[in-house]
Image (cartoon, rainbow, N blue to C red; front, side, top):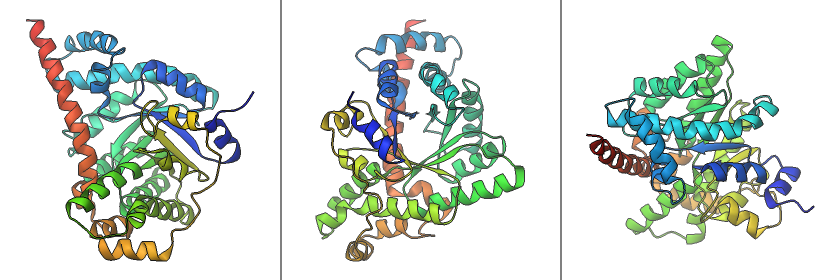
Length: 352
């Protein structure tokens, strides 16, 4: 039987894919197609509440959650746990069969209060007890890094997300090395470089500022950073694993093929798992094609927002959350979270 595109990629390269923000059916389809993990972000509750087929199920779980708290924001956190528990149950056999190598499902909670370390810690500990294959997804900001320090020492699997810069990656890797050497704990930790979102934000920012730059050069910006990060982590012997995210087009996946990476994608839509399976492209290793010097030079010369992402110490830890691409990504989550809060408030009124 002919293998699908992802199965052929996995047979010829170390590259793998994870499915993102899935329904229960999409989780099963993803595993059948070769997915080795799953990511869910703070938009997930809204996606499920507004989903044409999963909406009824999500509202049933919401009715349960409303009985467990009088605080609407806490209700959304509870609802998110209930929804993602069902997805982690689907991936749990894969986690067990692989002895914890595959089958993780990551959960990222309340984006409104993600600048508070204790909120992140409290949510992480509640989320972690759902299933052994739950991975805690935390933004790589000052508060997030502080929370990761504690959680790594507690042997908690982590997906460090909202990474848009080289310096964020370095700080996470150095922290992991320091803590694991001190405590002996080496939980699986992934760094999520969100290349697709970075590209989307950068192109909008460049257009708004009317920067005169070669479109072919601008198109490569995210991958220039991704390739630098990948090689830097490898050359320094850091033990963290690479997750790429924010896939918007098939190219966002094709460009990463060949590396020991995990690329997250939605099951449906533009740049989705389904689109790549249907396209059935040739398997070609492309990650290790180095960018031309003239490309890197023009990006550095014309885009200060590229320089702060590309160079070590381009940003301070305190400024990670102020990075334009990080803010752009977080705003998507806050918008979706707040839409869910509106639904929760409406459902609560019906109970009175």
